[in-house]
Amino acid sequence: MALAHFPVELWHHIFAFACTDGGPTGSALALVSRYIHECAKPFKLHSVALHGTRQAAAFVDALQRTPAAQAGVRHLFISSDEPSTHGRDVVGSNTAHNWIIESSGDGNYHFTNRGGAASVINGNIYCNILRSEGNDVWQVKPGPGSNVFQITNSDGLNWSVPNTDDHSQIAASPSPDFFVITRCQE
Image 1 (cartoon, helix red, strand yellow):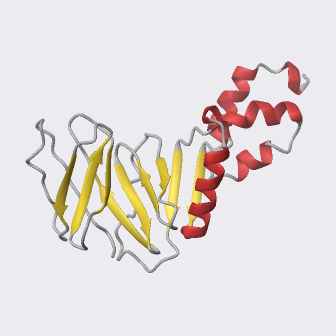
Image 2 (image 1 turned 90 degrees about the horizontal axis):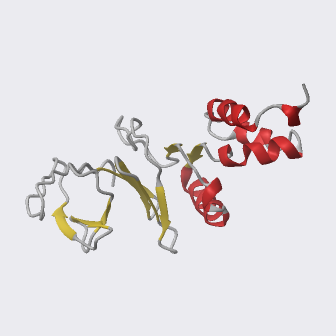
C-alpha cells in the first residue's frame, strides 16, 4: 500500500505515539516525504526536551513563529544547565496540560501550566508548584523585592506572598482556593 493511500487518521495515531522522545522523531518525520511532512505537522512539537536557557530562548522564538494549530506541545521537559536544585524536581512531571511560555524581552522566561510553573530569571531557575480548587491558571513570578512572589490570574486578581522555604497558603482569595507555592532554587 502506498503511503498516500494509508488513512491520515491512522497516521495521526501513529505519530501521537511516536513523537514522545523530546523532538528527534518529529523532526525526522518531516524529512520522509511531502505527504508525511504534512501529516506529521501537528505532532512536530508534541514532545519537547529543552536543556538550558539558550534552548529555552530558541524554543520561545520558534514557538512564536509557529501557527497555533501546530503548536500543540503535550510533553515539555526542561532541564537546567545551572547548578543542581539539590535533588528537587524543577518542574512537576505529572501534569497533562499545555505549557504557556512567555518572554519578558530581557532574557527572562516564564513557563506555566495549570499544574505548575518554572521561570528562568537572570540565569537562575525558579520552580513554583501551584494548585487551586478551581483549576485556574495562575502566573507566579518574583515580586517587588527579593522576598515576595507576585501571583496573578487572567482576571487580573493578584496577591503578594512572602517568599519562604516553607509552603505558603493564601487565605485572602475571593473564593475558597488553596495554593501551594514552593521555590526550588535562588
